[in-house]
Length: 287
Image (cartoon, rainbow, N blue to C red):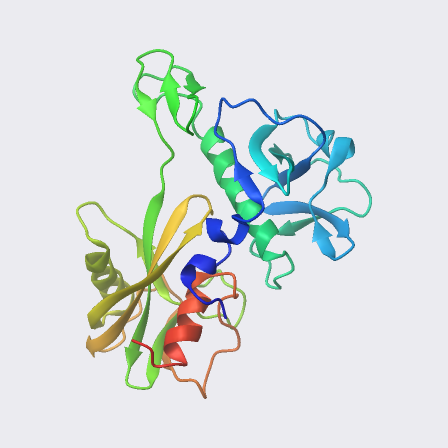
């Protein structure tokens, strides 16, 4: 189990030792380097001596034709990101590993680097025109913001806060299931923060809307960057306060109470804050 939520994949701590970020406008490092090639919802990897590795060198630089985005250095070598079309044929032996694969095959460091690249590329792809006047946006120097060439308005990456919460009732805890998830998988109540809400108010509303129950003792336990495409997951634990389960079938397929001796077939993968919360607060009565 990860010692704290800051140690989860997609959070910067995972890569802080070997990754030196570079802001837009900085002179990119010279020489061959590593490539974060994002194809659809996957990260392109190559076989390495110790498992999956990042493509590197001039061969990697020729895959795809979108302009490369310098991200800094990784283990002392230049690091670039590029989005490539799903139609691009990868070299023999290379593979595109989905970020949300059921089996966790991508090492945490590469998963985190890939998540950062995915978030940067999404921001750039979605920020080509000003939402005020429609003119072209140009990159700022020194940050990830954009400035409108027409009206001068500045735009900055939108990070969307979400809550995710484990609800406990004595020795039981509530898990929910969405219809689109793999068969047998259950997770936690989660949802986007609404305008005018605190995070704690969002917990109460989302739980009430999705399951019909009330909670008390809402307490924050940790957070995780979630680059799909640009969320921040704020994790909470809460206690059951009353009400009968009434599943909102527009949001969920099922919701039910479980206990450590009677678990669903699958729970969220270890890369997620959902699993970190379940492991720490469902099986162990930490407060």
